[in-house]
Amino acid sequence: MTHWLILPILVPAMLAAMLVLVARYHLTIQRVFSVAGALVLLGLALGLFWQASDGTVSLYLLGNWSAPFGIVLVADRLSTLMVLLTCVLALPVLLYAIGSGWDERGQHFHPLFQFQLMGIIGAFLTGDIFNLFVFFEVLLIASYGLMIHAGGPKRLRAGTQYVLYNLLGSTLFLFALGTLYAETGTLNMADLAVRVATLDAANSAGIRVAAVTLLMVFAVKAAILPLHFWLPASYSEAPAPVAALFAIMTKVGAYCIIRIFTLVFPPDLEITQGLFDLWLIPAALLTVALGMLGVLGAKRVDRMVAFSVIGSMGMLLAAVAVFTPTGVTAALYYAIHSTFAAAALFLLVDVIRSRRGAAGVSFDVAPPIVGGALVAGMFFVAAIGMTGLPPLSGFIGKLLILDAARASDLMWWIWGTILVGSLVAVVGFARAGSVVFWKAHQPVDTAEEMAEPEAVPASVLPMVSIGALLALLMALTVAAGPVTRVLQATSAQLFNPEAYIAVVLTTPGKQINDDHGGEKHGGEKHETEEPKPADNADAIAPAAAKKDH
Image (cartoon, rainbow, N blue to C red; front, side, top):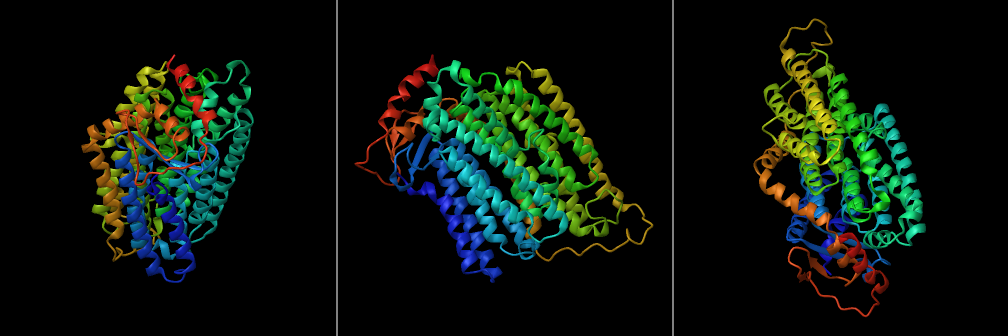
């Protein structure tokens, strides 16, 4: 068992506590330690991703209690990929918050930021559904504090709406957990996979209810129609670096759908057969349509970007709902792309707001903004990425989704919705760019519109941070081939979860390489006299045989 696996959770947790207790009134110290923590997290994420890149599944047993009785953390290709994506996003967002001064407009920004990272990373690494709920609550509490950072009635109202909807999701989550435990007697994901596979389909009403309820919970987190109402106001009113970090929040919901419905409720399971075709694909397509219509109808740039996030989540989950390795590969590629594109756009919205004078982010005509050429160029690149125009990674991601949709009976509906939605998004972003940057050079009449915009901030960190996110988009485009091959291996591991189940339920502390059939130990070898969960391990073989059959 290697202790490296728990460090991405411990580092932000301990750092946040230290910042509150020791450096509460010292902003410079908070900034230094927060950036250092983000760099350490990025290094840890790279190490874990590299360790899992050959198919190794790593296990950490808290208190050395064997699964399914103890708390476990599991690192495979998917979880380490999402942890790496979170840490790569966090660093430029944090630098923007420091450079723009957002972190000094209210109290406890940096501790809350670290607690938020702890919750997100914990959700990706946990191997237990109950602890997934716990990490959901951690990130919910931290995200509420971040959302109302710097105060204001609009921000407080949006934050209250955000909390109410997510508390509703948490309540449904508890109902689902209670039903799962009543039917199976466990909440460990690997143990659930074994036990659910052996249930009689004729007497499985409780499991069906639990599966549908879990899907609804994760749909709330992913902002899928009709459970999306919290997102537009929450994202548009949140402070810019917070909204940019929230670009990964909806991906937590998508991750949970992928994880649970490939491990616990796999495609060949009779109990949940047809659930995605009947519910998730129509909901995803309606989400695409609503999001892109919102882009076209928005009257503010921040609302337009928020609706584009809804549309992108619809596209992502349309690929997931195809429920094939090709579909999941496309969804993961598009998830990486849309995270960077949305984050860059939210930060650019803040730059526009601060430099455009009284007009702010509305579509009213205003004088040219300071540094308009650079900001316009960055907005142009980010808009191309978000709308899926060539040559950036959004175009490649949509091609992958369209290709994956050929395996679905609803292929033409998926193709039509995505293509028409992309066209509508192009029109919406083109309108925004022309009003904010091109029409800004037209003469204006009113004294309010002639108000002088703010001067360019002395710090270059905000523009460097946005440039870094756009550079990541370009790197994702250039490296589309290697990245896609990594994601194909990730999808293959998800749809063949025997290695994941075996490493969790058989030998405590051991790592299994699913590509080569070998075993690889972590930083230290554990020998323990504690009893192993033999009853659950014995069930692996018949369950795997049933899946193969």
